[in-house]
Image 1 (cartoon, rainbow, N blue to C red):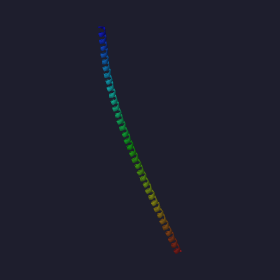
Image 2 (spheres, one colour):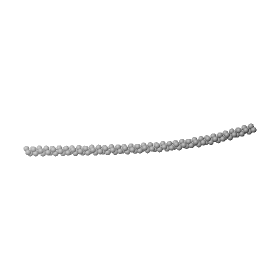
Image 3 (tube, one colour):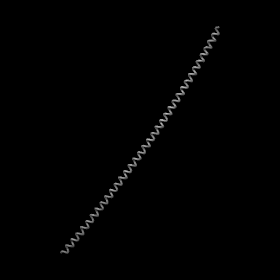
Image 4 (cartoon, rainbow, N blue to C red):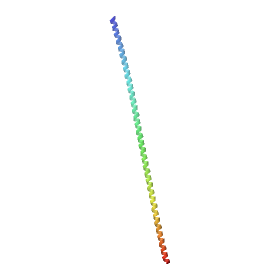
Length: 129
């Protein structure tokens, strides 16, 4: 009887152990699953982050390009303005020169006329004498 009892006890223990093992296994499996899920989540997050980063980079590039374009346009405008100014200046100079020339010519003409008049006067005087 005693022996039988002992045997029963042992059997029970074994069963319990088995159950425990099973439980442990289940727990382990659950943990593994959780880990996997977590990993997936992290991966997804990383991917999202990467995508965001890429988008940001693209935006930055676009902005840079736009800025460059604007700068170029500005420079072109400045250049054009400068050219226009230069042209105007040249035109002004030309006009001034022409005016001066005209004045000079007029002066010369007047001088000539004066001289002629003087000559005539002289002649007249001589005749009178």
